[in-house]
Every structure is written in structure tokens, then in C-alpha cells.
Length: 308
Image (tube, helix red, strand yellow):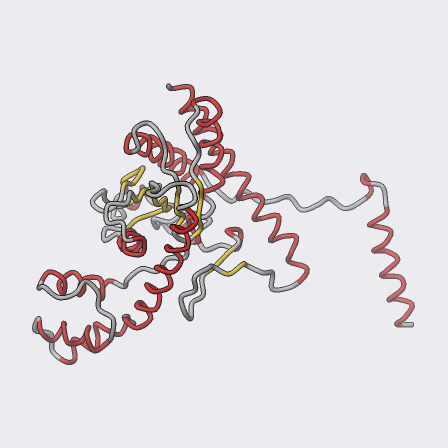
């Protein structure tokens, strides 16, 4: 009896696959990923970023653009149509893109390194012993030190910096094929007040004056945000992410890659479906996000080409 039901189930499945298209169950439709807040901030922010780039590079664009983190990677699909149109209609060479896996400092180590360097020490803190020693030197009690360093891991950060430097050297070696001194810029989705990602990228490439653009950010002291936002003004934040300064797709499977939570890796890992049945849904979501980003890029391209 069981074998009969197995055969019957397979027969039903085969009928569905071979049935005329109009008789098959409808394919699930991809859900829209970018919300109104995302679309507005991406269009306005990236438009301003491209215009700033052209101002910074004498009417042209950088030779290479680094997308420093997983959440920045979808920006490629918005920027590529813009650069294609600028090349076709204005003859401006399009930049080459590179994916990067960055790591940023926690707030305790970031503040400590700034003070350490200001007092004439080296510009990095590489061990927990160095971090505790510095905090003790500025008057922290033992109990205060232990509570402060609980979120820090200087040894892990040193390893991450070594890996980022290795990846940066790979990019520079590849770029040397096109010229001795390529113009390299970074484009990220978001920057905080401290802009520690920007600092780490400049350190990795040994380019202290490297332009770091962001779609939006809290200030323009260390980066060049397309839109400046205030995270304390709740009504300006993303309502679909609990009113946080974060794009809706950030951290979702549709991005297609993720970073290891255990140790820093040179390259991000591909997002794989937990079950085989989830593969079509994951592929559909990735393509949907790319499609929506391309549509934003086409709008920006039309705006920039028409305005000039």
C-alpha cells in the first residue's frame, strides 16, 4: 500500500511538470525588497556620491572602487548602470570594482588607539595587555578596565588588519597592470560618527587621503556621505528596520554573502540554502534585489545625463 502512494505521488509530480503551462500552479512571485525609505536614500545618496566623485577626480571617476563590506556589495548593481551611461554618452571610463571584507574597531579600542597615538605611542593596540595598560595609565581602576575591555579583542583585530592588508595588496597588484598610481576610492552604504571602517580601509591600502564615499552617514569628517542623517531624529530613520540607520536588505540572505562571526576572513562566504528546497527562493531573492538596485541606477543615470 505504501509503495502505491509513493508511485501516486511521483505520478502527480510528473504530471505537474509536464502539464501545459496554463494548468500548472503559479510560480511564487518575488517579494519587493527595497522599501520607500531605501529607494529615496539610495537614489539621493548615490546621485550625490557620483557627482562628488566627478568633482574630486576632475570630471572623471576613480580607476577602481572598493566595496568594503557585504552590505555594500549590492551597490554595484546600482552604480554599474550609471557608469555605463556616463561612458557611452560622455566617454568617461568606468571604474573597476573590487569586493572587500573589512573589519572595524569596537568603540573602546578605537578611543584607546586615538589616545595612544596622541600621547606619542604607535597608532595601533595589538594585544589585550597593551589595551589594559593604556587604560590604567589614564586612571581607570581595575574593575573599570575589566568592564570596558569585555567587548574588545585586540588580537583578533590585529589578525583582521593583517588579512585586510593582504587583500589590499592583491588589489593594488592587479591595478598596477593599468598604471603605476591608480586612483582608488571606497563606496560604502553607511558611516557612523567615528567612521572606523574608513580608517581601516585607508590603513590597509596605506592611502591616508583615499576618498571614502557613503550613501548616507552621520557626518562628513572622515567620509563623504551622499546624505547626512541624524540617528537621533527617529522620523528620518528606516521604519522597516525599527527606525535604525540601516538599509532594509542589510544582513539578509538576498545579499548573497556573509562574514564569519568567528574569525576574520579575506573573502566573505557565500550564503547557501539550509535546505535544497530553499535554493530557488534564495536565487529569486538575490535576483530581485539586483533588479531593484539596477532600476535605481537607471533612474540616477538618466538624471545625471539629462542634467548635463
